[in-house]
Length: 370
Ligand SMILES: Cc1ncc(COP(=O)(O)O)c(C=O)c1O
Image (cartoon, rainbow, N blue to C red; front, side):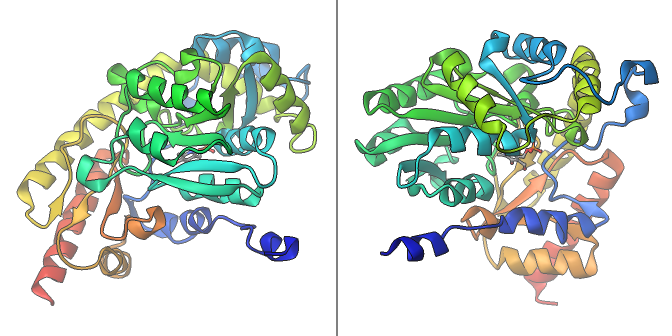
């Protein structure tokens, strides 16, 4: 393949994000969203004097660097601030990947992770997380897929879309596999905090071959702050800061100031998220138990579930829900698992209850071929 042909194949967009920004968010009962309902500025203990438009934030705003380091159980020299986990992933990959490098990405995957690696010119190989095995992260699958050319292994924990939680031993094994060939492991932990008490601490502490990314988006409903970060060993973190000088250069300072307030208040925000999820999880598990046409493990943590539709087409289900029931789900095809669909559990409980009832009605309607 010529360089020009290779160039052409690089994605210059994310099909999934485009869909999420348009079709998904149009529905009244939005069961497609994977993040907590939006936390309101009015509920943050902030006054105008806490905010400033411009400040001393060149390679990070020091109070925010300190707060993120405390939260991640690390030191500020290992933390790189970024515009959400999205930019954290892009910046981490752009620093770690040279054109033509081999990158292993879990399958099913969150599409922007794949597209970003391909956009950067990586040769992407895949390793399976199997539906029949609850999409468990399996170090053996990584070991079988890795080659001496592998530079990066990419996983999510919790897994998007399935919500499967990987334990430290599995991640450590993957770290060992990667280290043997001189590769790093990128762990996108944007959902990890939504496991609350069940969440292991960040894989960043498992060794310098790990690079982790996260943000305040999913577990806390603070997407609008775009407070994301990377944790990496200090020399790599420095390279990321320097590369960021070609991208966003600095974070918006007002948002940095608000993020410091939000981080100081995170236990209160987490409590409200946990309570809401507890309510919705019970509703969802009741729904699952009552249906014989969808299959998923009972939800124990996290903000999403990824059921399998036992007969019929999830695309048809999603279309019917959108057209007749004002309800959205994410069709599994966006995650390379077309027989599944993803349900978000973090809507306001009244809306969630109604959304589930509409999902049930649409499933019945499809079954009866009405
Ligand atoms: C695995 C994963 N990483 C990153 C993101 C984006 O997070 P952020 O809003 O912090 O950019 C998402 C959003 O759906 C996601 O599912």
